[in-house]
Length: 103
Image 1 (cartoon, rainbow, N blue to C red):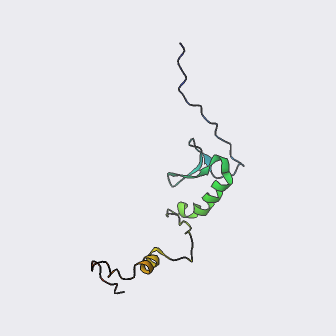
Image 2 (image 1 turned 135 degrees about the horizontal axis):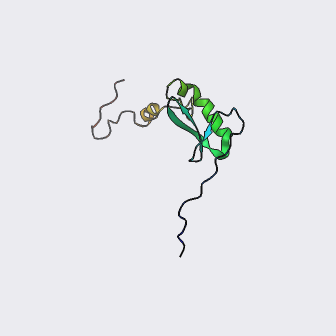
Image 3 (image 1 turned 60 degrees about the vertical axis):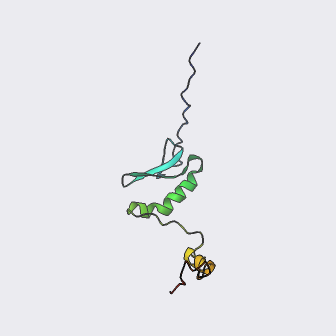
């Protein structure tokens, strides 16, 4: 009885969309780039344009050694602190466990 082939089939890495494309295909199915000695992933092989856009958004921060600033959900929306203050103004009604805010 022949032994079953248990080795999974490898996917072929795609070639770069154009020669100066800054990202490299990784074996895990994503586009990546090594920056300052660390590998960063930017998107799946099937959507090279979205991966490139993500890279371009965070590239300056990564190359400078900073944590990338991600876009917030809504720049003009309320903060978590504002929502909590609106929902729980004093908490004095909870059996006296909490004192009213002084600031």
